[in-house]
Length: 287
Ligand code: FDA
Image: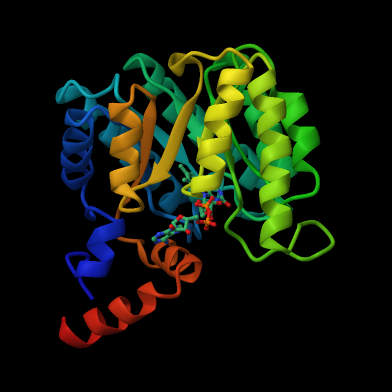
């Protein structure tokens, strides 16, 4: 199935750097900011990790060439740059992440490390700490469904720290994660209170209307101005709400995934929204 199929195209603007750059151009023109994710989760060797790293460097160059480096940053999964490659994986991922951070810094923008399943949380936060020694602008993602996250928020709610708070997208065991949707939302609010009340830069990554509203109320309660936190949503999800917030003067960033490995990403989005499966099935038949 090509990326141009309706349901794929709704969530992933394309496979090439040029597609990512033009989607960024369109979003920035509407007053939204962007973070770009080169989809490459199934990295099975060092050469592939290097190719993914180079894809980010090329992307950053492309953004800069179009004057977009201010409105756009990049999001990186450590598994895509080598974390899962055995004993040396951690070091390889760190070295590749450094290369991307250096390229981003040169262009005046930033990197945020995505968070994957709970077996990687400690290692990803360790890598973040190491990267932040030289690149303190590097952002983290925390997942409200994990029991540990409220404490992680406390640890990361300091000056200069950028934290993207999301609910969490992986199928996690009861031992480590809240299973009930309501409990996840309650945890999200507790975590957001810590971040909004702290000295860092909270990034409210959710499409949940109730959480968006609570985030606004917390921002007011803690006297935050729209340049001291931001809302973030995924490309193709609630675009009208993204625009409404941006038009109201809020800082809004859209997470734009692109690249040939869009299948796993798309499956996670469809799992969150089973009604989309009908559209997906139809596009499989007609394309
Ligand atoms: P929820 O899933 O409850 O959705 C709330 C409402 O949003 C729905 O009622 C519907 O209106 C709309 N909606 C949600 N999903 C939709 C869909 N697929 N299609 C259409 N409408 C939909 N996760 C992770 O584990 N690690 C990470 O690094 C990241 N990174 C990340 C960055 C950003 C910017 C965002 C927004 C999200 C992530 N996520 C993530 C994903 C996140 O953990 C979570 O799975 C999704 O955001 C869905 O959760 P919501 O908070 O949106 O609520």
